[in-house]
Image (cartoon, rainbow, N blue to C red):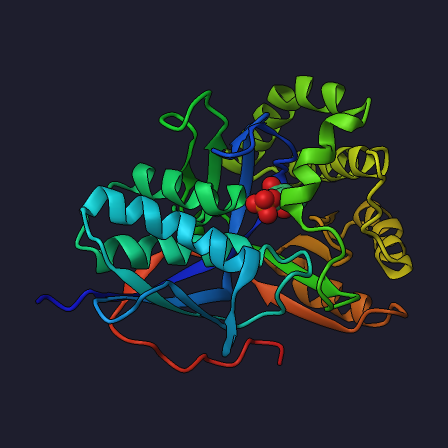
Length: 336
Ligand code: PMV
């Protein structure tokens, strides 16, 4: 029998225009499109091996055997792959991140992108990038955006068939840097899957969603024209809109810590004084400070001096999810 095993690597991504709320939560069809940048150096590496001797799927995540909801989500992807490949075998999935899990660094995006690519390859399927993006979306919406490389747009679509992501510019197109300012590395309280379901409980969600095409247009144009000021304005507004929805859901979700706010208040002041920086936060307290490469050293020095900042990870635009020959020991993250 052929070797039913493959290893894939995928980057995390940071959304410039956020996905928050589903039109269909089982299929993870979002209510609005989103735009992101892949994060080079913040990876998940996943090996999938289908084996006749397995009686269930087994998930080894960051060197621990995991069951429950995490395993169920992994099996959802494996079931789709098994059905398409007509392969009636359970799998062993060994997955490792080189960054803290569950702290607003979109670990599920990298994880489900790597899982989808490794599983389809191990099962011998030949799938297009759009098909892979659709498959990854079923595990975690934002994972759809970690399949293509560089700067990526996920078109919301209306069905499973037309909801997928594609690259709008390659990684080398714009040398932006994401300084991920860690103020708390613990597992977050309310995961994004639950959070999406609460979005419509906020009276602000409708306004956020209705205005999304405008923000997407500004953001796409800013990326294509490498216009940092235009990008900064729309990225900060979009993040603030999503957090306003989160804070006014029922129950309300407050993801920020005091140190998150300290950073958020300083960044626009720094920008006004000429440093090309802006902020955005996902469903966690850590602040992603997006900057032009020539502002990164100065921004990092200033950020390190803010009380409550524990650590800063640094990432430039990352490539597409890819198959690698074998499991490699992780290179140390640049800032560790
Ligand atoms: O892919 P999920 O279900 O973990 O949702 C991600 C939601 C945000 O990170 C908050 C925003 C985004 O677009 O990445």
